[in-house]
Length: 308
Ligand code: GZL
Image (cartoon, rainbow, N blue to C red; front, side, top):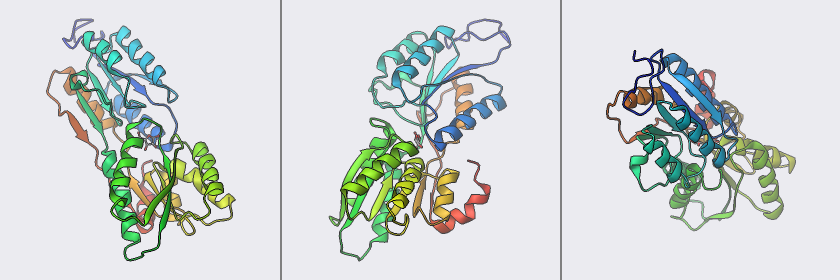
């Protein structure tokens, strides 16, 4: 392999000819994120790709710093999961000027210039929100009484929070009996989910449903609901997104009523895209992840072979 030669993509091939991938991860805020990191690290090893990895503790400035360090290191490809949708154009332009291709994983950016990245591999979060809404509408078919909903949003400004909120709202607006009486960010963490749900419970006497943008906030909310002497999944129906093991266990135990899956296992597909991009092959501008939904019965059946 070329030792230190230019591979045309701007990065310089290391002496051993291995591709070097710089990955700027969001953080370690949830079970989903942990599983996503494991998938990326395991599949880089499997693919023989040299992975430089950073954890931004959910701070955009740390992700930008990490991307800049990868540019300085002249990695062959940069990949990252943008913690929020906006504020990326400057650093992505620096990567483009350095001729280092960028791959978006998991979350999207709102940059108008789509030449700033090669492809975006991740879920359709609007569809996830719609799936959650459709299940709820189905549950209350033919029941005219009002349905009071509280919503735990993901990280403010993140694509999953924006899109899961809008997809859900789009579906339930069909019937005015569905009312979102409170909606606030729990930043995708259990701790914050519990704290905000405690506040919701104090401020709202009659909550029928909780829609949490991820399992972790839903699990935190369950602690708050039980702390208030109510039965999660019965007194307050709960819908979450992700389907990580702890969420699926709560679903099987009847504390959650429905989970919309969001797969974190993007590693293998990411490594294929990295190899294609370095080889100068064309890649699709959007790669959608396969995912489904789970009822309580389906969770019991699926739990034994859940990978994460
Ligand atoms: C979704 C991902 C979200 C998960 C959360 O693809 O960005 O971030 O739903 C995670 O659990 O924190």
